[in-house]
Length: 95
Image 1 (cartoon, one colour):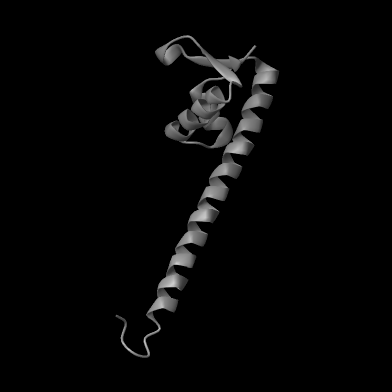
Image 2 (cartoon, rainbow, N blue to C red):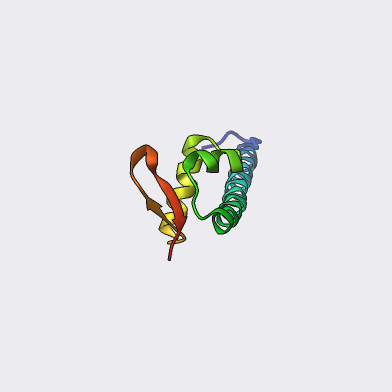
């Protein structure tokens, strides 16, 4: 039970809202970043035919893990497919 005159419920709600708003902005930025990257990657593939993880990192300003995440999402969406193995892997538009 809360002490009389305590504004604890309000302050917890305000903190929770502030945290939620921050999380929503982070997710929105992450989604927007992926959409921009996907567009750049698809444009690059249309122009050049193939792309590597390293090229995606350079093109999009991503870390190796961010590039891997974008590749995985695009493969899940059946936009690109992997050609080659290990360090020789390249990605092409899915036929």
